[in-house]
Length: 497
Image 1 (cartoon, rainbow, N blue to C red):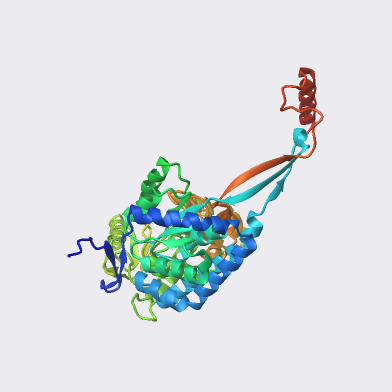
Image 2: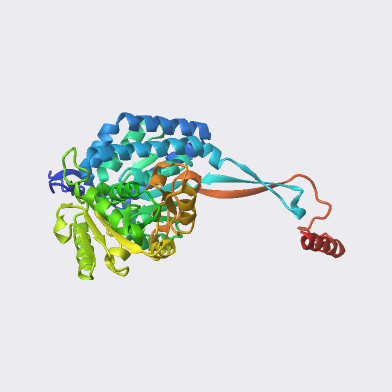
């Protein structure tokens, strides 16, 4: 008898460098996603019941398994994204730092805390506790397919939740290996982290699956689409949607240090970094000198797929057209191409592009380029630099290069960005205790740090009456005269405070 059962749908993952297929993965539909969520919910009950110290020990065991398999994980990341092996290994190392911090600090950050009571509630003992949400859905990006989603995955697990993870269809193997390593390290809680693979339809199914929160990383447009689905069931939503990060360089800054950081921040990972450097505002008296230093360093970089290449191909082929449009549009509007130009776009690679004097309303200044392109514009002073940096619809990260740390911190405090580094770029990314996230087109909510742990919990407030109060204001039995005396007393006290 012939088997007429249709073969499960699969999709191919291709090398960004060669276009050749490297693996096939199943397309998880609504039924598969629902089963993953149901299984995760069952396993989560036992996970949440564990003391925080036991969850810590399990997560640290998983962390050690990731460290042991660092080379294997880095190989998958490099193969799927095209980034150099060294960059992929560094991504794994940064992930380990964050996972270790979340595991070791969740118990402290989420423990029950006392709360002060007031004049009429002295007879109450007040406290609050952060409770796990249940099952958290995570939709991850392709540019940092391990580090970025683990800001949600690792912290949600540490907070006592289960996770169903949908990686980008460009990098599913990273997510599959991540879940496999968890099950191997913590077999008694297998299924607590489940990876479901597939295209946008799989993400849509996850948003509709009844998860207790959905954490998303991607473009603002896709975030709006997913958020609309979550709104149908009032599913809480956390969004990190990229940036158009600016660097401010003052007259007394160390220009060599600034140039070195700008080149790395703009060109590393082929510029495919949500908090990478895309705009630079240098005060006029140092603008030319800074441009010269940036061009000198950037001109020495040649993208490629070899072990010694500074960065690799564009992971998403469609991004090549965006980069070319931004560069061509800027030059057509009078910008100076100090290095490269539209000819730098030779898919799948883009050579470094340095532009100057780009109109502030050009696409290269208002839209996320997400490629190895940096714009360096002159400004009259720091006030103008801050105003231009904050004029962007994005507000994710920023950096300030200034002669003094305190002066730089004062400038940083004026910026709208959710994370700012002084005399470095992306310094905050390697500090697990610092929350990360933005506002406006960059999304909302925070991952990492204590705020990141608490983002995957619900807060329960509790009062316990310690003794019967002299005047029970929450009873109809209280005489009106007693209530009035209490109100007069409170009014008198508040007038004097």
